[in-house]
Length: 428
Image 1 (spheres, helix red, strand yellow):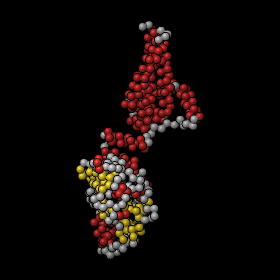
Image 2 (cartoon, one colour):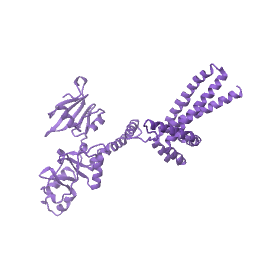
Image 3 (spheres, helix red, strand yellow):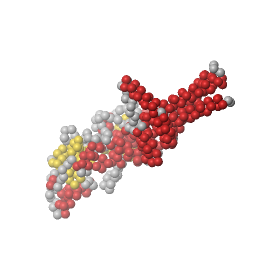
Image 4 (cartoon, helix red, strand yellow):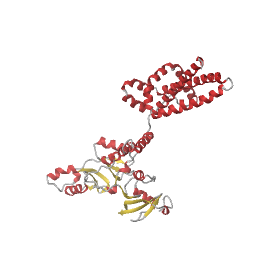
């Protein structure tokens, strides 16, 4: 091999190494995104300035890698053409160069470095920072011209091309959390808590409130002695007080406010004299807004009203927090779970259970536009009020009214129906 051919081969290998570097760096930066770059900036203080520069100049860095990659690929192809022409002659040389360079560039300068960069993005970004900043200075005139040409073309077609944002969106974050839970990167309890935080601002108060029919409330003329007995029996520490009817809530009675009259032996005083001003919120308000209102008013309970001003239910801070951390049980709570698996494929479900919660637990989409709970779903499918023991079908599920009282469906049994039993999505 003569010295000229050896020099061409060495130059070709150098260009291919640079092509490998630019391809790997481009993919690593794109895969990392700004969030990961900020994390790495804090994790590697010795290169804090480099990561800070990269996070602030991602678009410039990507333009530089693309320009550099194309320049060295073109240069490598030119050198290969000259080299193979000398070896094989002017007729076959260019064709051989095309075949060899296409194979080498695609495998060793595109697919291989990009796969490595995806698998080891932090390692690639960390070690490519010094040469990246060096090439950024060397190629700055070319990058300047290229970026302005691209922006000009973008403006011609009405496209905005001068911003780059790789921060994760809400949807991206939800996917990341779910995938992390499935892979074991985070615990299931942690996944549920994070998912609860994400969904918190999308949930309406009407979906999680204690409905009017389940409320414990006092008439304004209730005596202290009777009220104290209800507090002991129910385990509640705060109970709404109404005048004549439940739609006229005039206050909230705190159990601790009864201590003074009880200590004085005054058992006949009306509780209306010690009630506190209630907080009213609409049933359509989102849970995060309700949480802020309750924090601002320094109250742990709010009365939920419907569009006509009537009492729809009530909500407590505990209800709101349970949307994030899950059920909070205390010594007074009913230990019956919302969804109890009686045996494989058969579940005893409380009527108030939200359909979103049921869908998540059973891995099947229970979706209705006008109802939120299992009881509402059963009523919607049946078309009228079911008798105890009556069943309906929804997809592959058989839903049976287990406990019905005072025109309310308290419990239902949800079980996978046998194939021969299933004749339609919403058959009653």
